Image (cartoon, rainbow, N blue to C red; front, top):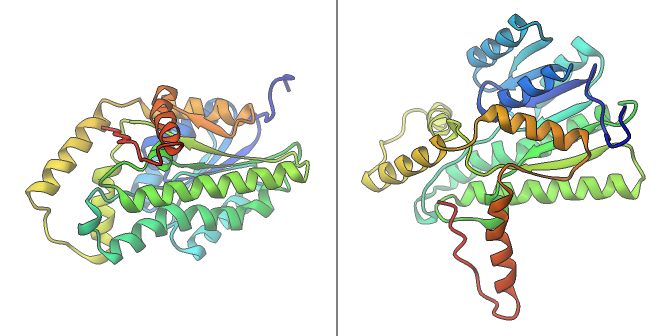
Length: 286
């Protein structure tokens, strides 16, 4: 291992949730290109198996596992599949995500529960189930969770998503500090993407409908907001590039992994207005 690397990926095993497409699949491609074996998980059974099959066709070691990360038993099933196949897990990427874009007034309690189930309880369950396995990794393992710039800024019209993404930053910061206090070889990190060309909005609508049955179509305001977000993301970074950035952060033991460091100016503006003004910045992400 090079002196400047904290984690050597070659020959290691990574579990990635939300890996049927988008950032999760981008991670899987980067990891397998670096010589890792991957266990892909997603709520969509057909798509996650297709993703794993595509990696295998390219000569990589990959399996797909259908799972709903908001369910502890499903997260345990991912771990069981990984251990049955590889007898080890070195990296966990809590990447599965969901987002409902609406003003708080229009977000139902059920919307809150569903979003937090995926975006916050999913990483909590993942950390709880996988930390004992990661800590068995000789040379040090790693737990990464996908947050967002929204976890730092909390823009409008994404309340449950913002709350969850702020929560996972706290979760990973706590874990990393506990590793450091224990002088552990293991690490934790957060990936904070900016705009990425993924279908999180479309997939979230589909999965939300599937969770409760067909829901009423959005009104004109909802369609306008959804179209704006879709257009915003369509011009974003390629998920494969995000995967390479995530891998680089993991191998170098970084805690904060940013895709768009320039967006940190929004966070700096927020901090600057806290004292002495006690005001909240606009923090517009779009």
